[in-house]
Length: 66
Ligand SMILES: [Zn+2]
Image (tube, rainbow, N blue to C red; front, side):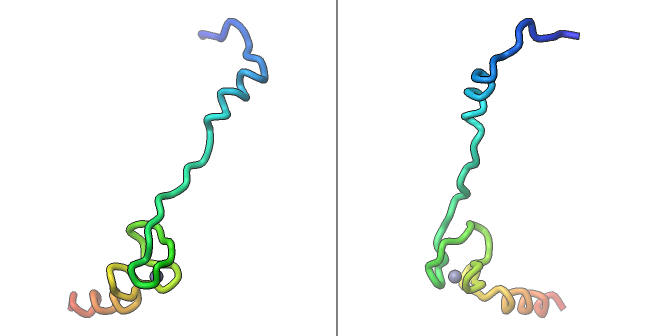
């Protein structure tokens, strides 16, 4: 088995890990109420997505399937 020849110092490992960080998600604005929302999701504030309210949209789509 291959093994590292020398151990890293704590500082060296810590320096490498300074690049591990969370990225902010992309945010867009709700077209209905203007709140910040995740793209391709219904608005958490008013429930609108593509100018339709979430509950209305799913019931309308369920009705059109029958
Ligand atoms: Zn909204």
